Image (cartoon, rainbow over all chains, first blue to last red; front, top):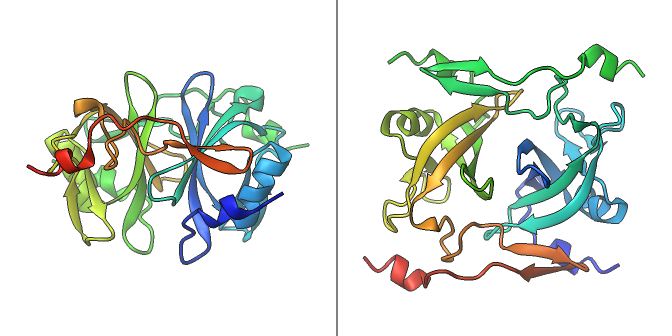
Length: 129
Length: 129
């Protein structure tokens, strides 16, 4: 495999790019995370989203504990090269660690953030495996 | 106006959050940019997307030169509070400074980034006003 395509990405001073995961079938924006070069390479190679966890400072195969992996449908790069858009199939229909379909479950209504998406699965159940 | 809702946002060490703009009608992810507290406050107040330009170090009313403003339909916050999702109406149908509908016009095909979205308007025309 060539890695020329990885050189065209504009990595920030920490060697990262922003990664947006979007559900291919619905268009729902599921989550936003970070990738380093290795994460993006592995995402293509394995066909499932691999992120860089800044809090844990390690590669994070999305769904490695929960099983809620993200199968890659398409990978896009933006105009200035510092953001990647992943179109994915969300295994299990749950992207968020709170047990919701996606992470953007708070909507601004009259200067308040209201939770407007249901918990589909108890997080304690998700991570008890 | 209260600003309590702004305190619930997890601003990074530079005082910024990631902002994803998504076209409300189509679900297309248009662009990803940054906002500081003032930008997010003004976005709500004015009803159009206001970002923080890191390169120019100033508030950036999206479309201030091109006219391609983004009318706010909905504002969402993610689980850890460090990313905002704007559902917008893209005025003029062009979000990208290259004259394309959105910024994610490069698709990874066989380890190459291929441009797969047409230029709808010559950028020189867009910014000549």
